[in-house]
Length: 535
Image 1: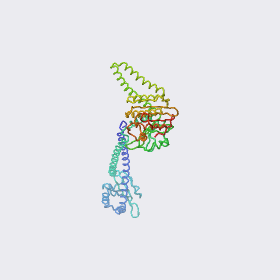
Image 2: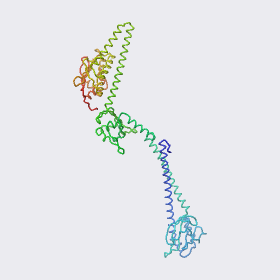
Image 3: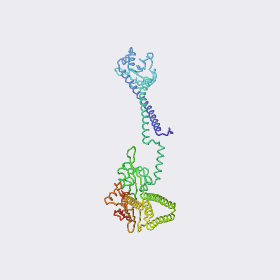
Image 4: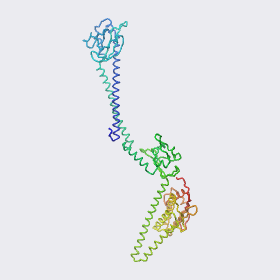
């Protein structure tokens, strides 16, 4: 039985075996109690019959006056009507006056249990008589003066008593068998319920999954916190303890409520558990965390929430690395396309034999690009911003838009990774909008202009385009989170995100009219940003 692998089968075997043992013990105890009860019942019946017979005038007169004629027939009729195995009437010398076997009349009563009856006591005894072992009731017979003149012995043979016990025991056995069947059915039901509760997993699989889960939870760099519907902490990995500054739970200590661990954040974490959260920033343990929350479902019922979180600085570092890769990828794509066009032009000039033109073309392209690179490197000290501007420069050229970075642009290295990542997002979105607006407006040559300045206490961006421009009402609509479509001049892309980042950095975004004919977006950011509380 110990080698059975399936939990369902194991439970059935265990519960059935336990039910069988209980049934056997119940049967043995029941048989003992039943036999004792039957013997007491038969003994009392024998004693009651003996007492009744001892009170009969026929018996008293026969013993008092010695007139025993007809006594045998009278007693035998009583025996057959009462169901007793024998009724023996004896005198004071224990001589039988009646007996089921007439041949034994006149002989001495055997069994050695008649002395107390002749002494005037009534009792129940068990002894071996002439017919075998029997259960007897013995009662003295008295005359009218109360003198003992004989005794009456009414008995039931052991075989009759045992037959009665077995007849009643059959009912008990049937009841025990029924209980055993119910036990087996209960084991089947319990096994299926347990199997369903454990999702069909075996104990060994559960143990392995638990070990794997702990290993995974304590290996990942994400803090993980599981709460039930009442806010009690069900699971907390090592990373979560470190990020939240929580102590370990001591052995035997009850599970802790989130209100005890994070009193300021508990209400927010437990609010609307059915509603998933993603990318929400929360301040805890002197640091900003980015968290996500999902409801825990058990059989389509919400049984708590699962919260994962990481420090904002880690997320921003990853975002910056991703932005670098995306910017580099975009730069390579644009340069590949641009160089392909130039190679096609150069190849055509060579095939035409215009070698001097080819040489001049090479020099012109090299000089123009190098001048742009030198200008940016000389005035813009932040490498990430230089890379972004070069990428947008090639993108603009590919789309036929002339992009110019103002010669008097200046910008020192920012240094702080989180601020650089937001600056790139703000500047990149504004330049993309300007390029698309310039492309869509063909009334004049498509141009955009970018100016950067960090003189004083602010970082300033100016992005202008030759598009059709936008009104103040359109600007307010474009910066709204409900805005989802672009207007005719393509200024709607990313403006809500730009506005969000600018507000988070404590800056401002202003709209004006560009000398190029379109819109001018001016961004003012303090060099020491004051972070707003994330929403």
